[in-house]
Image (cartoon, rainbow over all chains, first blue to last red; front, top):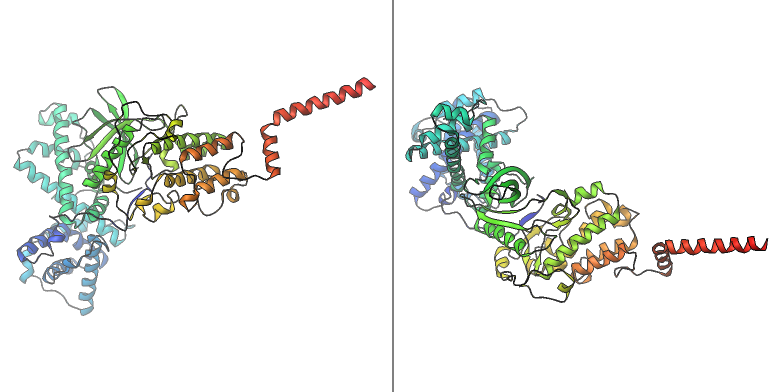
Length: 249
Length: 342
């Protein structure tokens, strides 16, 4: 059978740039385009950034909130994300490196960012982030970098589930989403197709058909989300492997 | 927003990569193998009530480039009708854009697994020769494999040898019946020729490295795509032979140093096939197969010039029964001479 060692690639990888990538749009000369790109990047990374700052830099809740807001505000103001070079590292690694540099500088200067002001508009749900950090401690064998990655994966899937919920609402597939929520998102191991059929007054075949349809939408949303935050096809594939766990074993 | 536990996260990851076959006649079973380009699943063909193997493009690889690669792979295999090449039954696209193709499900072991369970070098060489024949058939039809290695050669449950994973194969030219092809099984009459080489050229650009370390030829490792031809596969076959003789992935050490039981002739075949210079290798897989056949028949091989002692030794080994008979006859004659005198 196929062997994972097979390598396809080399010095002349040529992939088209994805038009809708937020990272590409972050380089736009049009400020409104940059602003939207920034919002996408912020929405995709703020929570793992907050948790990483708390874990790696042992920051208090208040400090981590300020540092997270400060980091993104500073990156946007100075257009740091435009400097990203996909040939050198993944965006995730680039962002984490920038973050470490930012926090180290803040700590060195002994500064403490004032909350509020121009960063107030970011309106990030730090309450839930703090609660998650408090209730779900990082596994002791994870490095801060691995923790950042794990939390990014969790956050990405959380965003995709939310996007799926909105999509189901739009197209009146609320039952589909409820089935998905109970069968695929719940930690309750006793849920079966039969129990869902009983609960929703459907036959079992309809339950499986609904689930197949909603999962298909979910897959599409995950890939769209990845396209949104990656700059090149090569990076998209790397990040997809990283997010979906499709590793070349 | 709902907190996703690690367990649910892993479940969602599985869901996101699971191919959706609900609109097809296939019912997905377990995963059989996973490679850089695609994943192979066991599936049930519900129309024909039989098991098939389905190769599906990996989800992050839904680019046009790789979709073309997969379709091309299916087309290549479908046209190569040979007992040593797995037949393709069907090709299609899933709702998410992933290309898949269904092929015969081969029950058996990979060549490396077979070698781990088979002590006899002669048995291994016979399997190797069959693999050479399948590759030679493809060469005769203008197709080079480019990723030959023990993991891509399968020994079926009836002992048949199948060359798998033509995902990075290259079409060198349209099929033209050649003299060499006469020694091989030709495709059925009226079979359409392959598409021209332009498709493969579009897929693989110069500088792209395709293959597997230890088994790829030096020109492949340098990414000299335009230079690759049948001799690049010959190099890989030589590397496979080296593995079969030594149980180790090929490296700079000579096979006889790793395994002193390897004959000088066998080592010479390996080294000739794996020569860094393309011109110094066997020109075709047929020539390589022929030399391996001679080795099995204890005849002189083209890759090695024997001295007179070796010739005598090989002749003696090959004719040991005849020699034993003559010796037995002579012993009996002497015995009769002595007994009749006394």
